[in-house]
Length: 93
Image (tube, rainbow, N blue to C red):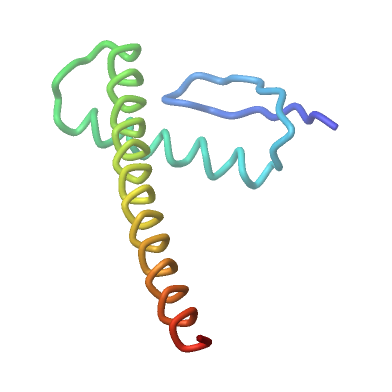
């Protein structure tokens, strides 16, 4: 069941309809607002839309980096798993 939640992003009130919990939406809006404040501190732009877009790009960059790290770890895990299977196969023969 979808819920409707009011969130405030960079001073703008939004109503979001989502399957996520209220706690999740609160954490998400806090995270975006944190990035907005970081961008505002740099003073690169006073335009709120630009600030929000830069903050979203920073979050996107973090996501891409984490996905790359996850893929590397998956590869290492698969390699180690194959190594262990090889050792077990040899031990059982």
